[in-house]
Image 1 (tube, rainbow, N blue to C red):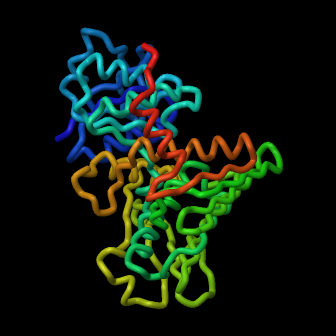
Image 2 (image 1 turned 180 degrees about the vertical axis):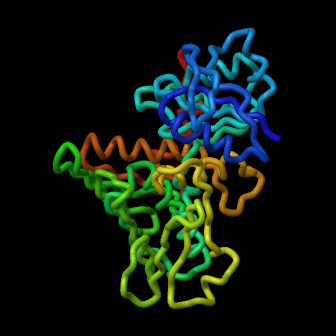
Image 3 (image 1 turned 90 degrees about the vertical axis):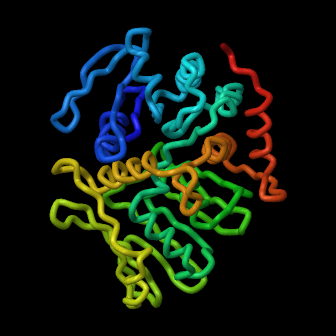
Length: 344
């Protein structure tokens, strides 16, 4: 049983992270929640105390195995410094997206001070995306040629999952066009020449995604097309069941493509909220030693995804230079993580 400590008590903690820990009660136990002020959180008819970290409450932190950081981007470095001060460099650290603010470049050096530090990128473990990952991995649609997120993708999250699907190490170009305050469009081309298209705003109730491969397609809506895999999500017996519909029944019977099932914590939750809680549970319970379909997202990769989006939004378009499975921007981020100095 691993003990979990959470830093932060905001909306994301209350809506997803606490429920994700409780959802894994066989493997995880919630030891403490720390924030800047004391209070009591009421989540799913249960009450959780929020404490200020001091000498009288630090024992839970010292005895913990996993630390989840879910605070503002500007406060992440303060929490990491606090963890170092309390000799927590060897614990499993999960930072909720999108990690650091673009203004906190010098704080990148903190990353290298921790042995096991990752990003809570729930999109990598969402049931519908997990099934799509399996279909691609086992060659059911051939090489991916294009990915479309129609009101269903959001910036760095969409980049993270699209890179997982294509295996891309870098993004060679990204273009951004702003139509109104709400409607934005992104075009990305990775080092395998795969195009990812994102149209905002996101709307998880009506949005959809489409993956086009050389020999088939995958989407979360039905299409009358040859070798098309429809990933459907529906409620059955108070569980959220995600399954594949396709003419090839032999493919669906394969063990890696069995239905993904998520428990619904309480009635009335949206499909996406249920899948996010389930995804976070799987990430927190995952083992870093298992390389196959690893759900633990490296911090430097998450910083790369977000920086590309930020630069394209500022300049309209941005180009990166790829070399030896690396790129100019990734090399710069790695360099900063080694040589930048954090303000104490």
